Image (cartoon, rainbow, N blue to C red; front, side):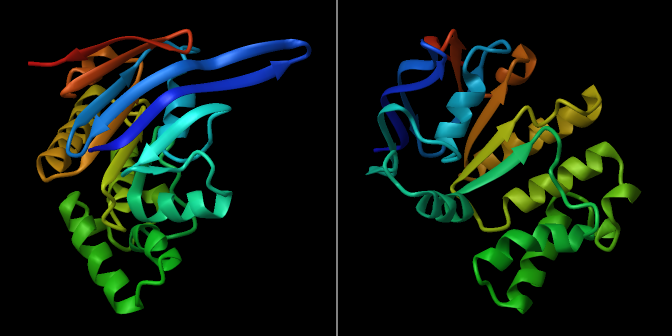
Length: 227
């Protein structure tokens, strides 16, 4: 059974009397443990597809199945619960809190899952060590490089031990050397059993994936498997 399946999914926006199809009858299956890249140019529909796959939005038409459950009709609170437990997000802009330390940033998702404080702190420290920032645990984002901030975002994405890690252009604000380290980290997570979904317009990043979903004008053009 796929971990995520989209069946005839369309996302339609009304612009006056016109309908704009951000997604048009998309069918997609992502199996557990796959590394999948959603690849396409700006305006192709890949961000809309990411929002739907990541339970940040629901389709206008069609069904979205997460582990066999149709989530396309879930309420916002139900979707928020799924996001908190099942999906870890890594964004291009890091989205870490400037007023919090590295430790506090990584602990934050666990607060919303009501994990006891001692367990939160222990797991956060383990994840910070995992991304190589054990020496930065009490620092704030302003004291970190861009690459270090993104590694904090990676650690935070793993805080609740999600089954799916979703990266939205996660190397977009990084130099090539640091970006390569982040991509190698995603590949390592995938080898450890996480389903990784990468949204990108960069062909060199897409080729880290096992499967590349090419999207254009809201439609899947082809699905390419890497050897």
